[in-house]
Image (tube, rainbow, N blue to C red; front, side, top):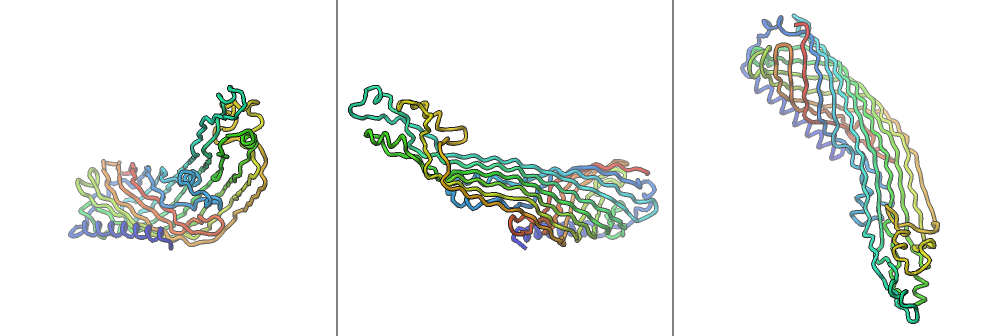
Length: 414
C-alpha cells in the first residue's frame, strides 16, 4: 500500500489499541451485577446525532502536460486549484433493541455525509503601460508631445476553476450479546456483536484550466519612422493552453462485520450518571469500483498575432484608447488566428470488483438522565483501497473520515 495507506493503518491501530487498554484497565477488580436494574432500563433506544468529519482521501489532481511549461509559482497555483473537500458534515441515526430479561442486543444504524468544494484561482503578471514619447525629427510637435502608451512588460496569466463533491452512506445491521466481560461497576456493559455492513461512496469533479504562460510583447524603443511603423504592425508569439475534466467515481459494497461496544459508569448509576463509552469495529466489504468521465487538452500556437488591433484609434497618439482596446478583464485582447492548433481528448471508463478492509473505533462520554442520554466523543472509520482515484490508469486510494461527534438518545419501553 502507499505511504498514505500505511499512515492511516497506523492511526487506526493506535486508536483501537488505546480504546482496548483503557477498557481493560478500567475493568480491573469490578463486580458484575446489573440484573436488578434490568426491569428499569428502556428496551428500545433511538439515537440521532452528527459528526464533523475530516476527510482522509485526496483524489489525483488533473494536471495536463502543459502544466509543466508553467514555471512561475503564482501562475502554477492557479492551474492547481483543485483542493478536495477537507471536511464533511455527517448525520447519523441508530435504533437499538434489548428485550427485558435478555442479554441480546439488536441494532440498525445509518451514517451519511456530504462535502462540496468550489475553487477558483486566477493569476497574471503586471499589466503595466508607461508613456513612450515618440520623438522623430520633422514630425509635428503635438505628435511628439502626446506620444503613445507602449507596453514594456509582458502579460501572462493562468486561470483554474474546479467544482468537487463527495458523499458517503454507511448502513450497519448488528446482533450482539452482553457477554459480561469487564463489567465496570454495577452499571457497565460489554457487547460483542456481528452482522453486515453496506457502504456507498460517490465523488464528482468538474475542472477547467486555462493559461498563456509565455506571452511576450515587443519592447523595442521607437526612435525613427521605420521603427514606429514596425511597432504598429508588430506581431507576438505565444501559446494558449486549455484543459477540461469531468468525472464520476463510486464504490458500492457489503460484507460481514464484527464489533465491540462497552460502557463504564464513572459517576451515578444507569438512571442518572456519567459513563465512559468506547467501541471498535472491523469488517470486509465485497463490492465494485466504477470510474467514468472524459478529459480534453487543447493547445493553440500563435506566430503572427497582432498585439495592436486595427480598431484601436486612428492616430498614433491615442494612448488611452490603446489601453482600453488592448486589454480585457481577464487578460489581453488580440487580433489574429492561431498558426497551429492541437487537441487531444480521452474517455475514462473502468469497473472492477474489489475487497475492501474496514476498521474503525470511537471513545467518548455520555450523560444519562432517566430515559435520555447525551453523548460526546471522537470516532474514526477507514475503508482501505475503496476508491479508484486515477485518471488514465487505476490508482487505489482509501477513503475515511474521523472527527468529533455528538448524539442524543431517547429510551422507550422502560
